[in-house]
Image (cartoon, rainbow, N blue to C red):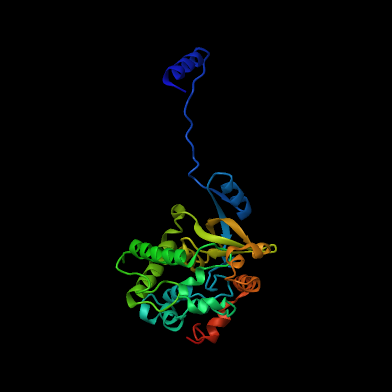
Length: 296
C-alpha cells in the first residue's frame, strides 16, 4: 500500500472511529509442548517449538546414555566431586575414561557394540557420525567435526585447542589441556545449576528423536550435551529440548535411510545399532571394563 493510499484509508477509518495499528509478532519465542510430535508439526507449520524430554530416555551416539541403568564419565565425575570438592581432573572418572577408552577407528567408537559397518574400521573415530539415517558425506562429517570442536573450545576460553590434536569430549585420547577444560567446564556448569537453577534462556538441548514402535529415545546432538549431563547429575527428570533436525527417525523407514540406501550400512546393521541405543545398559559395561566406582 503506497503512502498516499495509506493516509486516505487511515483518514476514512478515523472518521468512523477506527484505527490501523501494527501488531508485534512473537514468532521468535518458541512454544513448549509436552508431545514431541506435536512440537514437530508446529515447527513444520512455520513457528519455533520446544518440548519436554524425559532424561531417562536420553542417549548418545557412543551408547553412553543418561538412564538409571547407564554409566557416564561426566555424571560420575560430578558425583565424585559432590563427595569431595577437592577432586582434581587427574584423579577423576573422566580422566580414567579418557585414558582407557581410546577407539582406534569408527568401528570401535560405539561402546558395547560390534556390528558397525566393516568400512568403519578404516575411518577415524569421529566418523561414527556417519549415522545410517543421515545423508552426510565423509567430507561433510569431517568439516562439521573440525568446525564444532573449534567453536566449542573457543566459546569456553581455549581457542588454541583443536581436533584432532587435542581430542574431543566423547572419548580419548585427549590432551591434558582438553581434559582439564572438560573437567572444569562440567564442574562449573554443575555448580551454577545447583546454585541458581537451570537457565533456560540458552534454548533447548539439541536431540534427534528415534522411534521404535511406540517407544522413543532422544539422541543428544546439535548443542547442549554438557547441559544434559548437568541436569542428569542434578536429578532433573526432564529437560527442554529442541529438534536437531526437523524429523523423527522411525525404524519403519530403515530401508529408505540415506546411508542404508547407498550401501554403507546394511538394514540389519542399522536396526541393530538403533536397538543398541534403546537397550544398552552401560553400567554393566563400565564394570566389565574397570570404569565404574565398584572397580575404579
